Image (cartoon, rainbow, N blue to C red; front, top):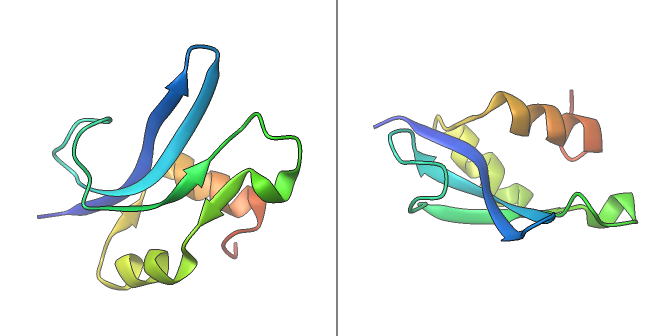
Length: 84
């Protein structure tokens, strides 16, 4: 079973919000996740409040072999949540 860390959409029409979650790679985008790691709200005014994530659990899953998607990895690097 390969595991991916990716975004799943929540929120309402024209006001998106995203969950950062751990998925089995075969599940659909908004399907059942293994663990919820945090949230991403792109419409927030303050840059530090856009991403809220449990870095300890993120590092745990990455150490177990989970791969973040390209878009999530780019988002986390750009926000400074993880190192480049």
